[in-house]
Image (cartoon, rainbow, N blue to C red; front, side, top):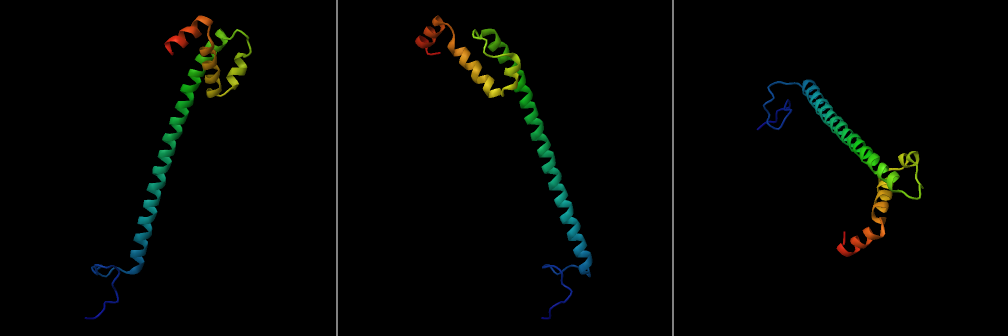
Length: 116
């Protein structure tokens, strides 16, 4: 059993394909695969950025509603609209929840009794 010096693959059925063409083929295949994966990452990143922007837009809309409530129910007038706009969504939400739970004496009694 003699060894074939032209064997390029394990299957040994390369039919006279030289090493340069095999190398070029493998490099092109690798380059195509890299580009395909890179494009998939870019598309995924664009989708995630779009979701983040959509979430920020929804939070800004909700934040405006909270600001209106805060300005309406803030008896001490500690906050101005400009100041509230500069706060983050979570800060405005915390202020909103604080004002909502403060309420009048009657509201506090009802919340205490009925555990709302």
